[in-house]
Image (cartoon, rainbow, N blue to C red):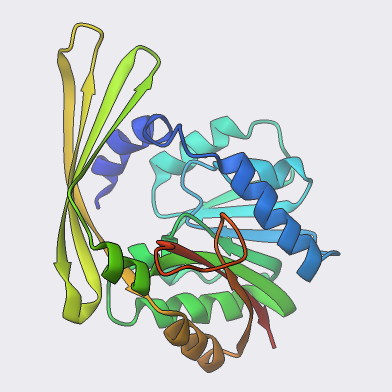
Length: 252
């Protein structure tokens, strides 16, 4: 997606996902970070978007750096997290990121890994985890789960969110390339006012790759990372219909 698209999308992004309980998910993740890395102080947030998770890490006084490909998303994150000296942001494609520092923790949430569509992107993602983690550092990220995708199948969906006097109608039409384990998602977002007039109709597409835990383990081992736990944001047990899986890794 080009920045012009991100600029339009970024202004409505938080409204579209206003029903997502970021705080509850953050609290769940924090519990495991404190368990596996209780003395950590620094965090790298890959694919931070508008800072919906970043803001909660900042409130816990972590020194956090948020990275996103979209300047427009970062601009909103900065407004969301004002007057916090423990937060910094970098506009960069996370696949090309090479910061001159290492972190106690690297997080990459809301299925960022699955948005990386090219063949070698997943391995590059793991290389960057290793590159930016201190020894014994912890990485935590989520991804689309192969067993759930194959069981539930990608379907056409429409979601309606009412926010600030507007209706946001998001329609998704997926095309499944099963052999390549990737889904092309065509979508439209209509913004409708109180008089049911369509104010804007934003259209686009993105790709979502899905993985099984064995492949994630393989990439982790290749890049000198050890799987500590697989779970979901709703609990420690992964089911066949758990669409998203959370992975916790440690750098060897």
